[in-house]
Image (tube, rainbow, N blue to C red):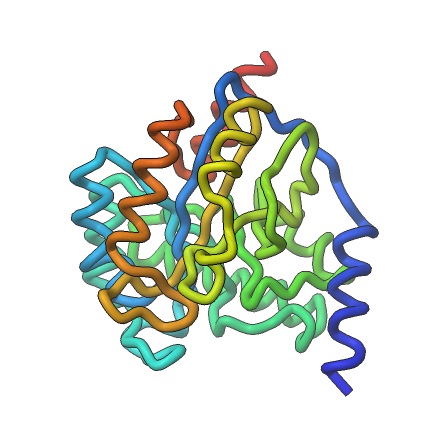
Length: 249
């Protein structure tokens, strides 16, 4: 039954209940994000990001700490502390990594609050302002809940954010071995730059032999290099929002 209904619900959430916000910064901006997140997204990706002066957004689900997901060991509290100390952004991914299509709006609100408390307790009161929908599952009834808590929310629908975007369902591209071969990355970077847009990438593990949902270190290095060659600024999700707000002021 879910196979029949879920695509309809996802499509409804893309079309209905939108809250358009302007997107635009001279020359365009690129954001890198990691969902869940596997240890390799910090232990392998972290040094690459540092070497190239890039800060990323890590969308954390507290319930995955020290657990296994998609066959990969997930982050530890020490990883979370280290990436925060390095200046990376921490965003919310619910506490138990649950689909908004599987729980009520009230349960989603409780998941968000629980994750906020879990992160704040470990990061000295840190408040997350960005959200990523687990599995990319956006439910119409859930968008208002998420909007009450977060400045922006990112989905997984392919595309560049141009002109205006739904603040509760930003488009993105996947840093995933199952998706990367099908993208014209040079073209997407150029389109972002030429149209003063915002391109967001999301990934999971970063390994020499990644899962279908992850990428290799060379893949990560390539998107950073292409973004720089296209003249894009590279910023966390929150920093990109601030840059665009300043550009409009």
